[in-house]
Image (cartoon, rainbow over all chains, first blue to last red; front, side, top):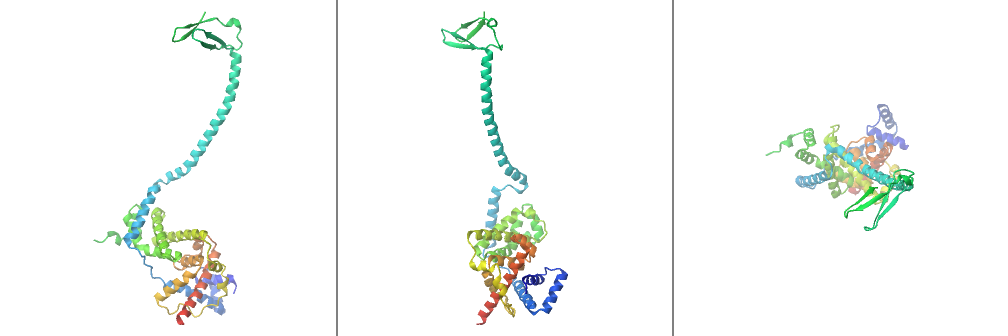
Length: 177
Length: 198
């Protein structure tokens, strides 16, 4: 007998066929003694299990068995979120990777910012120094130097008023003369 | 004093347990623990493992109780959970150790296919206890996959499609495994019967 037919015969024994297919298998079993024997054998195993319905008795007492289950329920409840807070669990699941990604992005932005502005600041200072025409004054007794930047882009010597530096011991004053 | 929950139906107890009543759940465990354990024992063939897995099943049952809609009976729902846990455990064990040569030989089913049909019925005329003992001995000799599919079909009355879903295989594979499992069982039971007569 072909394998497909054997499986179909079994499906008939198990009641898994449509009415038309079941009728086909019934006719086969009527006509073919091998098919009839095979069907009978499969049915006998099915019947044997059906007769073995006596329940198995657990070797532990009700109290002992339950106490272990109860402990495990409490233990797992302590580490799991309550069923009502499923959204919190979902949020927590997403929050960790999102936080990591955000932190990484922040580090990258800062690194880029740190790199780029430094170049710009250098250029800017260079430009400013050229444009502002710094002038240095030195106070002899205190030994302190002042650098004064002129605000105009292209100052002429006539625009710069002479200044006088006063040192009263606690502060310095620059007076235009 | 009798516990008032002893007289409640499963549905009433499930409803109470779904609201967080652990005493109601304990009563459900007491009622159905033997059947859940029997399923685990049938699949694992080891008392300690069956005990552990059946307890895990009850813990899972409690955690998923809100998902129980009453489409099947509570005990059927619990049995599905324990079967799933057993399948997970068996997959883990399989990864750890290769199956025995006998089990691997049994999978294609070539030997069973060639076996003559056993006549007369190899379990005919047996007392219930004797039948049970023989079935157990024969089941223990089947490969894990054949035993599992047989238990799911014969004890749980699961349809081919549902077994396939739980075992993560095709319906054709289920039919094939079931067929060879039954043929192997018939052969083993016939052998046991001959031993007994001799």
